[in-house]
Amino acid sequence: MKTLTSHPQADRDTAAPGKVWFVGAGPGDPELITVKGRALIERAGAILFAGSLVSEAATRWAPVGCVIVDSKDMTLEQMSAWLIEQAGRCETVVRLQTGDPGLYGALIELVQPLDAAGIAIEVVPGVSSAMASAAAAVESLTLPEVTQTVIFTRVEGRTPMPEGESLEVLAAHHSTLCIFLSITLMGRVTAALTVAGWSPDAPIVVVHKASWPGEEKIVRGTVSTIQSLCREAKIVSQAMIIASPTLGARQWTTLAKSKLYDASFTHRFRRASVPVSNLIQETP
Ligand code: SAH
Image 1 (cartoon, rainbow, N blue to C red):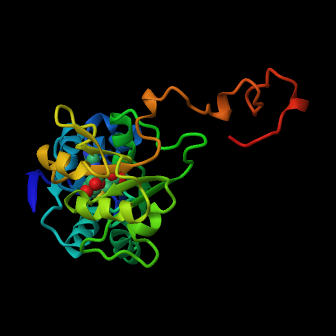
Image 2: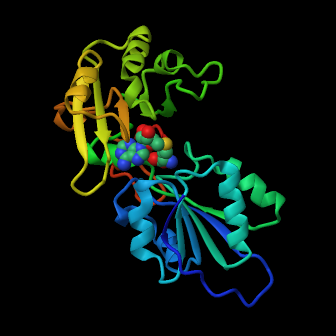
């Protein structure tokens, strides 16, 4: 456990325990935290952050005297005990997590002991690294008539995959796959895509440290080349693998347009410029 600042804040006046906020810190760029998340950090008495990825946001906006602790060497039990202890001491306690707290973040494991201790909690969503990676690569995860579905998944590592969720099965949909926590298992990823019928030329993009100022790397390849390209780029951690039939669409010359912006499409905020009788109404 590493303490960055340890000036204990003055004890609170009230006896009621404080609230623990699970805040999504965003993918790395400290400016990608939400306004609400930042405001909570600015008034926090204690912050428990998840590893180096989010330390910058914590330290940049925390008030003087805030107790800031890195959870990287703590067990879940130690983390919940710490949060409970801090909630007894200060009004606003922040658990800062990378991306969105609801994705691969042990949110429920931490919330349950707080519920049992009668401590109020709230979750503030964050920009997931999946979204930041798509943004970095200027890719759309959905495209009309290509795919309208995004799957967030991982390949099996130490955490077993539930039945029916192997990458081979999920990839059979040929929709967009945002694959977390799997960069060191790239061989398994490409093997699964191949079993699911993806062509060796199907595009894959890997984004390392998406949104990190000066550290982001984007590697574009295919099912057959991406593993060696990532090895050459020395990407072994903090990377998002996106496999999708939408990749590279920025360069396509033929593109089905979104119905939402089509001149013939009427919706709540805009009237169609062709008679409604000619239209089949459709939800965007
Ligand atoms: N809750 C986080 C995910 C935590 S799991 C979120 O919503 O993004 C950790 C995994 O997220 C990493 O193995 C990597 O796959 C991905 N990840 C986190 N930050 C990233 C970043 N800045 N760029 C690319 N991938 C990232």
